Image (cartoon, rainbow, N blue to C red; front, side, top):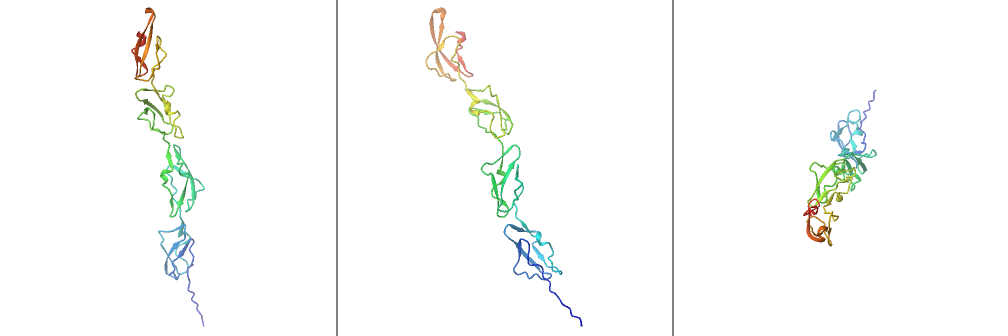
Length: 241
């Protein structure tokens, strides 16, 4: 007399980093849903698992729940090598040449659901020097990027500093010369070939001053009114006196 024993096989009740639905009996040919524990996300291409006749699931269950990670792309930069980008991770980053880290955000957090806590496009900022030039303006071809060499013009009443006829945008985002010293206020000279300026004279462009010319041949002094013109020259021209 032969005795046959039928063993009712069940599939394993554990899924790595996940849980089977409570109504799953794990019997042959049964299809069951599953969920993943916090910090893991289910495989969208395999939303359910089926128990086969040999008591194993039809897929490798260790591949069903994947660790939640934030995107690895950082525009114009790279995350530090020790940044795993897992949920809850705090990561630092560096920027490529021509860009600097945003000092307001020296690090970022990988938040719930695999999203960075701030917009990563705001992390690496392009190095651009200031467009402001006191009493002047940069040339239209000046992009103000790192290593750009820019010329400039000055407003009426101001002249280009001959010591800095152009400036270079440094890697730290600052010009290589103080822009407040580039456009110098035009003044007329107090040191004249003949005669002298009388009293307290403002030598700015447009100022009118009393000038005394020493007329030696007539043994007397003659007062004149001089006006400071653009480019720092007096009118009338005292050399003609």
